[in-house]
Length: 185
Image (cartoon, rainbow, N blue to C red; front, side, top):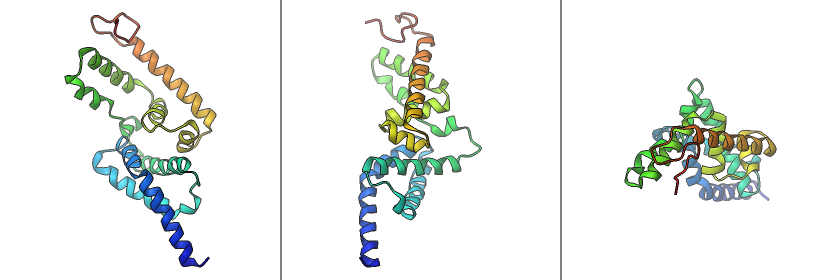
């Protein structure tokens, strides 16, 4: 193949990856930084992806996780010196604030979840965020974090257990049995 053909094929593959995951990557970054910075971080990540595209995994899910890992590293470099808890910014509290129109027990549950989330360690927040919000499988989430899938599964299990314990130990609103973290119905 000629260099022009190689370049055209590389560009075609990059465009396919870009189209398939841009929106997910933007949401991934928005959860972890200020909204005004998200598009800049995504643009920088996609530039790195383009430059290193020959290193990209062939499978779509793996390429998606690889790209999320690049974006994550950019975020970490940009936010060095800030507390990661603030930088991760999975905005559960915003969700709880918009729940005012929902049923009282659902609102109380969301507020409890937001409180418990804020008490979780940064490591636990990140593991849960990758599994729940980004819907990454263990091998892909592990690739984002640069750890083994077994280590990620262990980290996720510990994060879930920590969240359950925090939810069980939060003060319960009236009408909730102590220690359950759930509606009595």
